[in-house]
Amino acid sequence: MPISREEVQKVSLLARLRLSDAELEEMTAQLADILDYVELLGELDTDSVEPMAHAIDVTDVFRDDQVRPSLAREMALANAPKHDGECYRVPAVLGDG
Image 1 (spheres, helix red, strand yellow):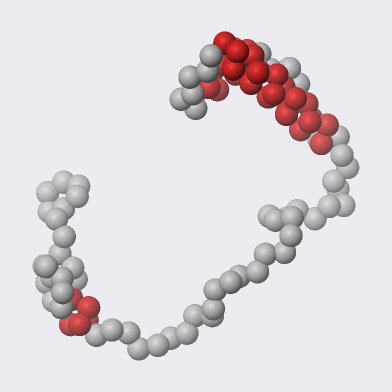
Image 2: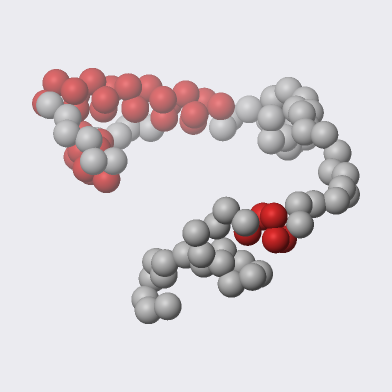
């Protein structure tokens, strides 16, 4: 699939990349090669291939959630510079608060 130098220049602008003329030529050739390869892959019959998110099995490395007693609210708020007895009080970030 051919890609023009102007298209590569537009993509570089969107990506906020400043490319020299030599780099533009090189990127144009490289992107054309990549698009040709993707087009070649599109010719493969994948009807019998099951869709997957990963090429290999991925297992969860986290432990199971278990309900346990939590820290008492008073203790959690004890070192807070400002609180209202229920929540931390922080300066407003957006608007008046």
